[in-house]
Image 1 (cartoon, helix red, strand yellow):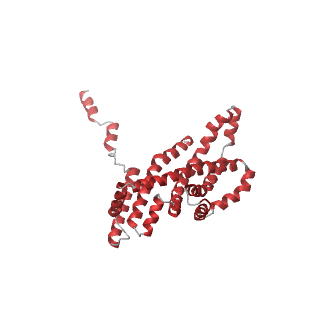
Image 2 (tube, helix red, strand yellow):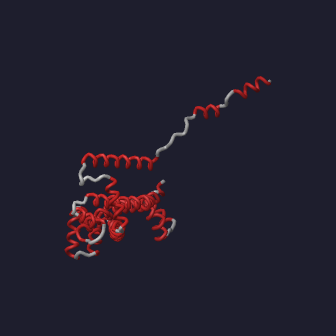
Image 3 (tube, rainbow, N blue to C red):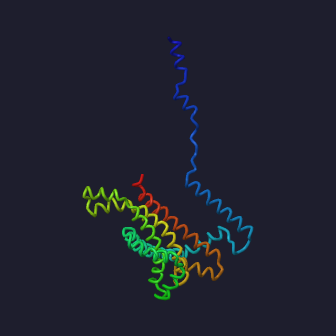
Length: 274
């Protein structure tokens, strides 16, 4: 009996065998790690290209960083970025409000959709530069002209996306809300808005990336401050380090807004589908 007990104690259990056979936990690099690694490789390639070119028109990363730090210390960088962000915010809100209203109206009214579809196609294919020039001619070199030009360029994109969202609204959910007597407010809050939220978030995300670019063009053409204005001055002086410094600083700010505001909103908008 003692021998058998000792034999049983000496035989490893199945859980012990699984623990021995289980592979050691591996380090997971993760999305952030891949992003940082990829950017470091890009910076290294940039540095090598600058060394090979040995030209003032191909500055290295440290040269651009020095210019960025200098502009940040004298306050020019922050004041110009702030001016651009204010224009972006006003243009974005106006375009999202008007574009969403137009898109929902067309999506819920087939007759109006058929009539105004040609209008949407026309404005979607209108070059942004033409709208910018016309707004400056009609309204002068003012903030109203700048914000109007950016908003008009963005409204058709929002309208098209929200029109598709309005078309995709489930009739089954609407019938359910009618049967259970939700009322218009409860139906809007619990039935309509959750279905439209992904389309609104998608149009906001794609629209914001378009608004950034158009605002820079607007500032380069007719404003006395902003990132676009600084890029225009640097272009006239062939100051490539200045161009890259402002471009990189603006890209960093945009990415921070993207990761801290837009991505959480988009994730929350699509949460109801899971």
